[in-house]
Length: 374
Image 1 (tube, one colour):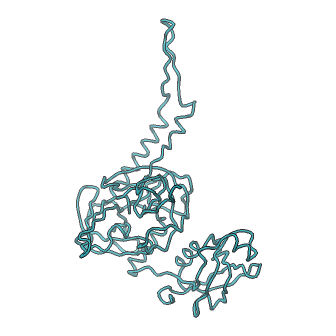
Image 2 (image 1 turned 180 degrees about the vertical axis):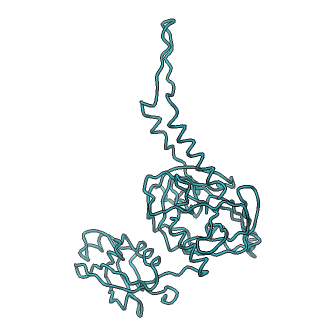
Image 3 (image 1 turned 135 degrees about the horizontal axis):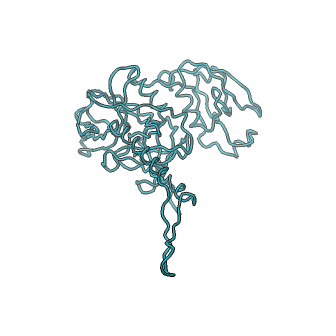
């Protein structure tokens, strides 16, 4: 039996022959036959007008030229008593602060791990090597922000990941296997990927990944996923693979989530997350749904309501199924966890619950996870 894929915290680039369909169209090929001469004359097929393909290629080259200066190669070292020196390599992207002045590098937290500032080397696109003077980390999203003191750098522009659609062409830039300034392209294969097992030591709770067929390999972690306008729409972070190498399924943290974490880390030195106060059923299946008189598996089933929490004050009960949160249909328990934790603390939201065979609506005011976690 073939083993199920293992999710590796690495990172990705994208390789997809997007123009092959164009080349396959008969209208884009011209046939010329050398008439005259002997009866053994040979027919030749030649490519017709190359202008559309050449224009597409030139456009990709312009995007690459725009993106490359903003992408960096990162190498970190952690000195341990048990294992000696542990080295990590990855990628990052330079961005400018929107609320706090300065230039910063965004990458994955697992790329720099617990390394001291002096042991984090950032190689810029022009070959300069610098060290950050401050680092912020949010392990719940596997993101890190590094402040750099460097002149003459080109920060990347943010894109809106909510506007990214399945099928959109994207480019990935990074340092796969240490090969810095590498760029590949592909498409967005899916959105809203959750429930990924990222290893026993992973602390990631906010999973809402973009899936791409980017060729994510070791060293791409922390590099940007960019759109055809050269804007950052994601930070590459993991792959699904049986081998540890690229198998065409990569995952990227959406840029809108990255920007929120980025701003909160710079303003508050941490990311505050909202809290509901329930335990959810991770094994909610069709049999359980039918017992509750649901027509299919949907929402998130409550298995416990913690006392003195927003959920208890809103009178949520055992076996309630949360169908909708603040106007968004809930797909599963991980979706609800993500929705709640990324909502503004103290915000009053409407929950649509399935209880005793019918739907009801309640209002709950969310609390601060730091204060309410049992």
